[in-house]
Image (tube, rainbow, N blue to C red):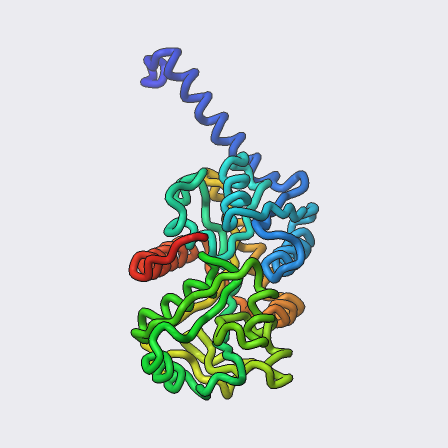
Length: 328
């Protein structure tokens, strides 16, 4: 008698079930997508994240041959939109367009309605967007060194504004204070528009902002650029030094944009998404339109993006802890 004939019938039935399930799983992955895909943008329509997310959705739709529909779920520092994706089926039909607050909220919020480590699968980092440090033109500081000297001579007298507590520009300011060893007061606003208006008016002294937000005011002479926040100069502003060049060490700040799926999404689908997103980001039209939003492509696949998210989480958690930054 052959060895297989001696196996219990229940074992053979169970083994057949496993093999059938595996074949069905592979067939599902190969058939994906066979219906529209939804990408959740955790911000309101109209901002830079929404504009970039919609561009990615349009181009990804062309690659997949299915509609990719943007659904805006703003609120609570992106945690509302994040939670929608965390609770979605892990089938590749719900994606999260994840900006930097995805990692910042993990340090700022005492509890979250999801587990950032288990409820999401990193797919791809798409782009980064450095900020620039701008000051009101009346401030007597022409570079970062002069700004630091002024802040040290007048501790607690200078102010920096942001679009709200817990935003990347807020924590960029906190990191600047820590690394430059200066006392500058944070003034949070409900949105970038009011913050920039008061910066122009002189009610506050400085701000970390995206170039697209403030360059028209720089060109009109109402604001002055002192530095860029990334570790290297921006191609669009080659004559503007970095904050590190100005003497503030270990200062490398940027917003990022990536895509995640619910945890447990089949690897075949995650890999296919990563491949198609990489092709989207190689499109010259995408590169140009990202540049219009002050963003530059920086593509990482699933494993590298997971490591990137971990390093960003550690960086911002350290800033929150050392600065004592809190939500309003």
